[in-house]
Amino acid sequence: MGVTHSQWTGVVHIETMIESVCALHIASYVMSPYKDRGGLMLTGPAGVMKTTLLDVLDNNYHNALSISNAFMGTMKKLQPAFYNGQVRSLCFPDVQSIYAGDPRTASRIEQMMMQLSSEATRTIGGEEDSRYAKFKGYCTIFAAMTPTFYTQHINKWEETGFGRRFLWSTYTLQDPEVLMRAIIHWTRADIGKVLIPKCPINMIPDALTRNNREEIMSWLRHQPQPHEIQFQVLCKATSALQWHYDTNGIKKTGLDTMRGFAETLQHDAALLQFPDQEYDAIMPPEPVPVRRNGNGRKAAR
Image (cartoon, rainbow, N blue to C red; front, side, top):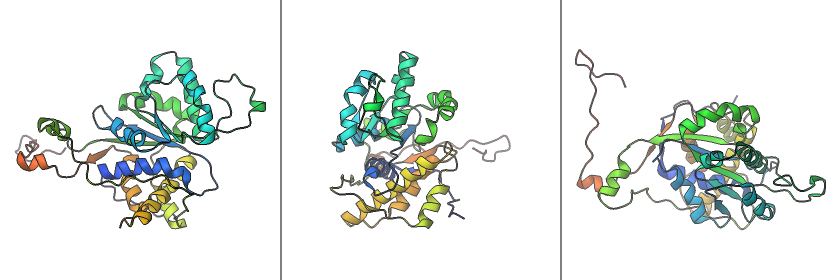
């Protein structure tokens, strides 16, 4: 029987989110009998740093590419880059833009994303004869969307198999005003000290035990089923993060960090927590008013 993590706090730290997103990018370097790449779908309301988290990949990795508007012509031009690993992760900061035009184009791009993230694709666009296509293209897919868009499409995605190929990370800000206060003080919100993992020169060894994998499997209870692709991708990301810590002498474990990230994979949206901000020491935020019921007692939230 697998190890379970029953005491979910509902809180995830911004440092944990950044490290986990990076770990999912370099997960494809981990030695594994499985070639599935999977990916991550960030779901949250506007203004909760979804695009910022994906920009971490685009800004720090030469083999991660961010696309604002996806068309089949663009995907076709990228086909050689998928084959030779020049592009290992593809980011869609606003996945909703794919669905703004012709529904047939959106369906074809969905199919391409599914193929790149799992069984691989030999052709893009369907113009070539797949009998003679010799190369397979793999890619990890990252995207961001609002909760409304997610609820409108998830039933269809579960039917087509799109949902099971990705991790669905849902969160909002614990302090909704943290970013506004930073603007008032004309600075950027402090996210703490994060050392971005580098891409390895060689393959990364698997660092997990069977008990580790059983615990990781328990994190996926509320993810679209079946969980095979999500499970193996989480395992590889955990090993990648452990390699990063060991290489840089960081006294942390990949399992602990990814367990923190798994707060966003549960039934209820997690709360994204920032470290204490310097500007709050100058001008502390106003306390959240306590709602009370008719008899003067604190009302349940």
